[in-house]
Image (cartoon, rainbow, N blue to C red; front, top):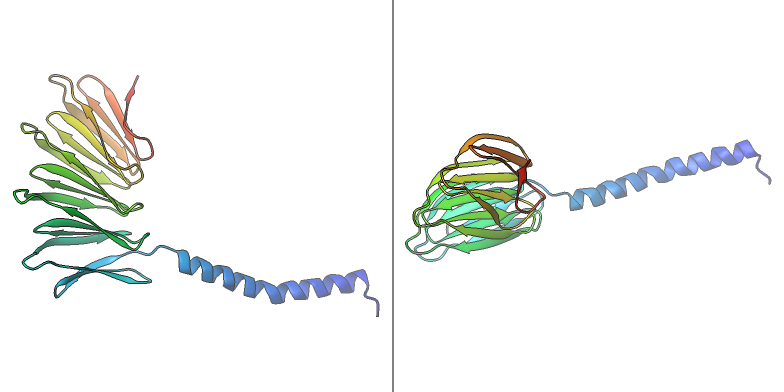
Length: 216
């Protein structure tokens, strides 16, 4: 039996309609399996548990280790204990540990969707969620933290001696020294950049570029 051109077209459309739902559901299934989901963090008995939409991950507490604070935002979870910092990456489903010195005192912290920053009496710590990686930066003996800001994918620390930037995407802290009596006077930002105007110049820090750029 021969099919006309119109009949062949109708058959092709019918086959496509039958196949399409299966293809779509398959794609949706793959998408659902690989999609990264928000995380929550909780303390249950002697464990810290991070739970996202597909799994849970535990960290056991040591004998005598106390939990001082926990917070989750988006893909990032943070737990501060008496002996260490614990960061959880929902993307990698992995806990990462940063030990604290015995005489190191916890200060403040900010937790964003893919980044966390913690201040202590001796250092700055940053947790990069995409890599499940901790970075640290020592604070000078006579250096004082004046301001900490965090938004989107970037964080900014203003001290008496430096401007220090942190990004979710570029590991490590990125600092620029203030010159003489130079002081930060105005700060503008988006979720991916900080522009700091000082008494001498304008400096920019961006989420996907290492270091600071001086604006001419």
